[in-house]
Amino acid sequence: MNTIQTSKMQVEIWSDIMCPFCYIGKRNFEGALSKFANSENIEIIWKSFQLDPTLPEKEEFDHIQYLVQRKGMPANQVHAMLDQVTQTAKNAGLDYDFDHVVTVNSFNAHRVIQFAKTKGLGDEIEERFFKAYFTEGKDIADRKVLSALGQEIGLTEDDIEQALSNDEYAYRVTQDIQEAQSIGVRGVPFFVFDRKYAVSGAQPTQAFADTLNKSFAEWAAKNPISPFIVSDGPSCSPDGHCE
Image (cartoon, rainbow, N blue to C red; front, top):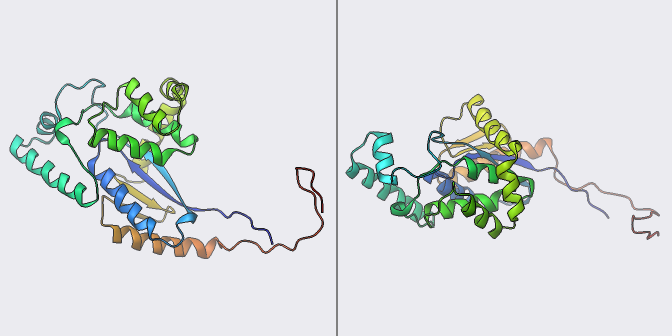
């Protein structure tokens, strides 16, 4: 008996590399997905979003100064806020080091993400960039840094050059951002399940599990995942084997 691959339910995730809750949300979602019985029938699609497109490609302020200015909060409150976020990240198994975060524009990183998606490496590049930004203090606007990180997950130097020079990938970034605005996304992370349900923010693993179960049950009712039953007979394959 032969089987035919069925389609998969899509989960789209809008995120920005410089968003601390996007990395936490990724981990919580992964926790739910790891226990989901039909995880092989889920297709994850990463979408670009920029929290602050006005940031320069070269760092002008350290992360504390940047947040003091952007949020209009005193430094002691910013430190307290980041301590709380760091603990939330630790609870998700992540180590954040805000003292060494390089606060720069994330657009170049998103261009590389868009290219990586064409190679089936969207999840891998998101993970690598998040760790580079929040744990390792890497400059995610620097082209040499992006090239080195991209090569770690299987891209080539030429791939990175194409991602950063071909306007197609910049266009895809802006398309994702415009799409987010059109469907009412005001903050990230934002998870969309089969274009029917959404989870906004880094919610607990159980919230993702509940939405996965509900959305997949409805999707599967319209898209049976059982393979076709095929009655076999004499046939020939492309390699010339006939029986």
